[in-house]
Image (cartoon, rainbow, N blue to C red; front, side, top):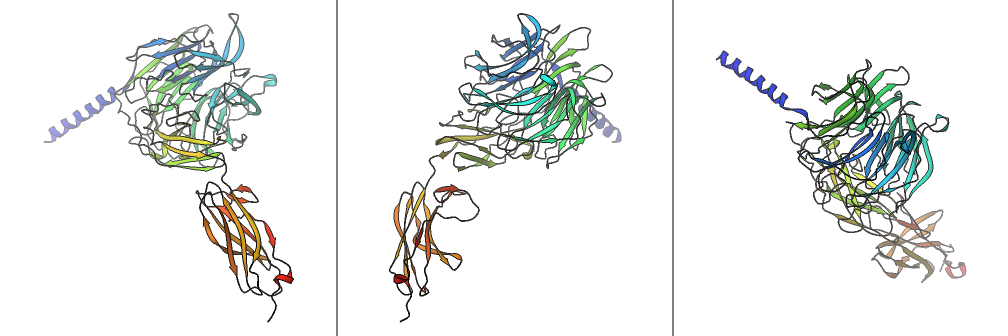
Length: 629
């Protein structure tokens, strides 16, 4: 019996080894042009349900390139003829800036002038025409240097603005600049800027879960910074104790599933010239702490978070150049409790690299794309699309429930209950809102997902990050239709929730007039007034000055329906003879979670009751004196 037991153990371990061996990444055989000093970005630009790949960077001997590969399925890709400017030392980002349902792209970097490499830095926006063609638009952005660029709705109006970190400008200054999306392909330089970093990187996300887009950046000047959005189109700098890194990359994710965004940064420390790859935990109070995860330090790096094995934890790809001069590319499996295990999947080591996760073959696990300078003499670059094999298939999160709008003036706060997921903990999910002026519409806020099935068109967090409520500001009057989906750690989207609607309209009003009291006697009087309600019901009453305090006096009627003009009154008794009284009629809207209260004709929100009033002094003692009989 002992022998049989030992045999069972041996076969069990053999099975485990076989299972482990079957879980791997293999070269898909897709032929990508090798690039370095560039970027990778997956986006379903043709809305056919699979992800396409944009690649920028130098192909060899510092020749700039920008290529878009259409995913034709079955590991077949074809080059798309598009008017993209070839760039190196570059960045690019997919985003639906005009909310028409098709992904546009902004590209910046160093290009050539008259066919000669001359360090000419340009930024161009390419509008997706919806028929697999693009039109180049000049957004009026001048980037001098190797600045990163990103789409972000930093002003919470529903459309994507452009944020860029300019480098190497006059005097060596580097600034983060904001170009506001004003519609009709117009981007306005706000003139507002923040201190940035040369030779650096910038990423956007809600780092303190307050419903606003924040910024994290690093580079060769200053420190690694976190900028918190104040909600009025300004930012407050939180300078971390984290050293600045150049030849760097960073990425955001809630790696510890505690409900807030952490980040990883890799690069060469400015102060001790040592290669580092460090994870920083968000402490939830505006501070960040280093997690000592034992990651290989690299510069000229590419890092990215993604749950490749669908265990609910964000794993990490790290590529770049080690301290000994060797190139490096490894996946670190997140085992939870701040433990990361280096996985040996035989990935090609590269530097001056980019690395991204995306489920390009739609088999419910994340694949990996890596480009960079290979471990070969000269300018020999590589680009490899690794296909994942043998990993547990991901499932999409549950549909968000209990959608609620709360309107005030031209603003609306949308909220919902958290979703659940079989792999990602609920607190680790992100969310994605769509808003339109017609049923099923997205012309106010695009989710960059397909409405019919919720399939993501980009491989990123949802557009409201990990929040379960979000405010959109300055909406015109009208009826709006909205929904929300949940996004998991493998960037898979749930179906959208059943569509809801809300209305932004003219501010509902209530008008009040205080009339002279009548039936005045030696000890009694009847207070008198009129109320006119518009759009919403209201409550009404009187305020009577007794000594130095205002007393609440109920009115008849006290509850008034919408669109009503009526008289209100209240009978008083026990009045003091020979006293002059002052009183006011008041009314306020009652409908809504936080109803607007009207005071002197101006609506405002207040935690205390308020009233609209008009004074009326009761006639002088000759008519109001309370005479003893």
